[in-house]
Amino acid sequence: MSQVNYRPEHIPAFLPQEWADQHFSAFTGISSLILRRNASTHLVRRARGGTLHEAAQFLGIKTSEHGIGFGSKLGRWARAQDNLHAFELALDAIATDLEASPLIDYQHRRHFLADWTLSPAIWNHMVAQLQQWPGNRAITDDRKRLAVSAYIWARITQGEYFFSPCPSDIAADEEACRLWKYHRRFACTWLRQTDDHPHYRELKVLLDDHADQLAAAIDAVRPQPVVATRLSE
Image (cartoon, rainbow, N blue to C red):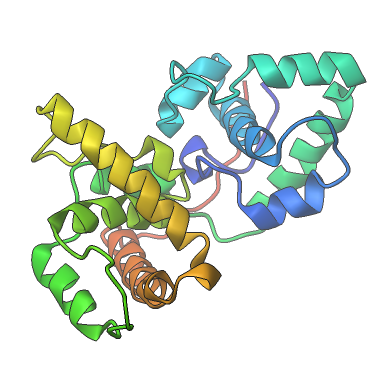
């Protein structure tokens, strides 16, 4: 295992878009999503050893999910275009960027939010601030509250909403979880396309602000700053 100056908990589960734009823009024949997801797992493996599947599990990535493009798609792409060396060099550069950045304990954030949802009181306060647009029929009930909780989870953990945990109060109900996944996908999709919908454009501002405040509060739970340590074999 190569020497690194970060720990596995410092790796976001989904590589930030700006790093992907900087280091993966020359790659073709594979989606940025797959590269970002796999880059994180490879960086974790560099820090803790083990297999890629173990690294993915550490990040909360469910490798059994159909169509996530983990491992095998990247391997075929690397072999077909002889991109493995270039991919490893890109990972080296990303690791350098990571080590030069403030180190965030994303594992701590994931643990903190494992059974968290946006509270009804805070949600209702947000809804009250939204402008009532003519003809707007956007749902603002409890289904929406639980759905946008996944968006906040993804922003704080720097993961993908796709892997956010089902809310604990409905986790035992298979049908309720299925419906929640549907509403989660709908809400998170619109929150990424806010130019097309004024309701979600306003809501996103409120959700982002709350997420950033909550992230700061979570990080403050550990008063001692995280210091990078050199890990070796």
